[in-house]
Length: 92
Image 1: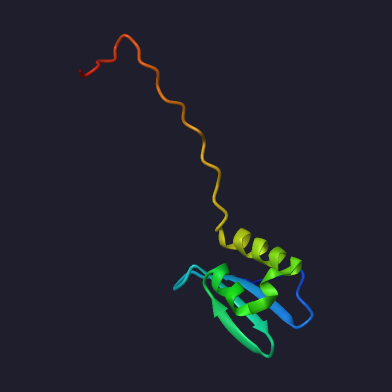
Image 2: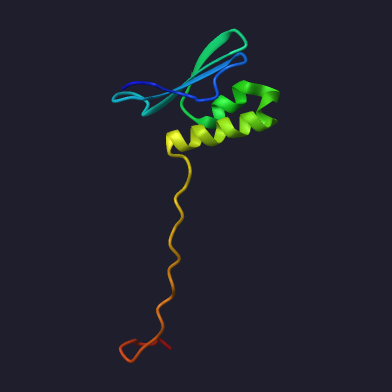
């Protein structure tokens, strides 16, 4: 699959998202401070950024990674409890 580049790459940071057919399903390639590493979760990638993870651009990067990797939980529909009716048996 063709890698997806982070739109805000620059300033010493380069990030690519790869979706694989074999092995880990999602991989993030990050180049930061003169070294490169592969990460399978956005949390491990943010750990690599160190103190920079608290800046606004890093928060935007985290949101992009979670979106690409499908880590954003989908909202669950609220289920209303079923009201008792004439066909309901009560155990006493």
